[in-house]
Image (tube, one colour):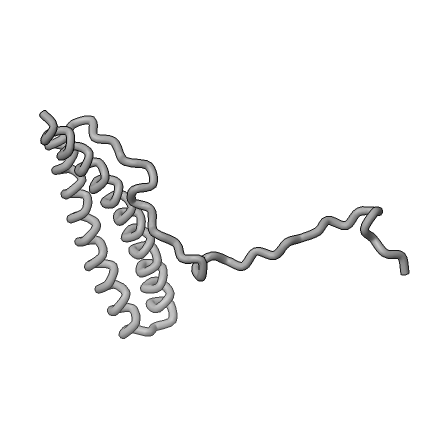
Length: 112
């Protein structure tokens, strides 16, 4: 029974990672679709072809990812995702610069 519990835990982590990958690939499909439409309107046929080919390849990848998720759910019914397991690791350099904004009030306003 312990082996089944471990397999289920591992499958849960894998499912979470797959779902994160599905989100990422879906976003890339949207970008490629938008870019191909823009290229087509501007009559840039080479760029249009490149983006439509990329979109097609990404859709294939997306279908494959969904197939893997379906197989996991069949093998492990009721499988739940693990919060935080599929999140992308963010480096400090990836974070936007946040500036501290000090609200202007009568106590810190200088009169001119």
